[in-house]
Length: 112
Image 1 (tube, rainbow, N blue to C red):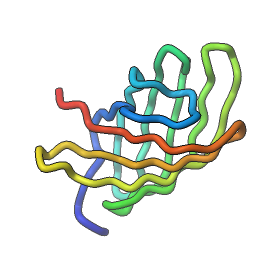
Image 2: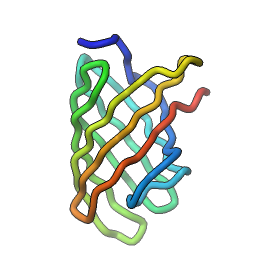
Image 3: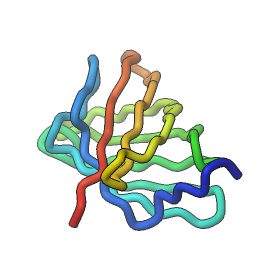
């Protein structure tokens, strides 16, 4: 395992997105067991979204599926690079490819 970063019980928000369905209101709620990660997400455009993959402490390789508010199903692949900010929050640069496009999303941890 890389740098011992854990996504367990962390919440991240999209702060940048190129060409995707998610917006700055999207919150991802992560869980992690060993190297397996899962996340649930939703916002004004996405009725229900799920991400599942493996995380080595630095990068993840995941698949996701979501249903939009318009009833469209979207599936895709996500590769994310995770870094810790000086204030201890996490930031992720996610490159994704889906059934209807590809792009990059930047996620930042929301402190509770």
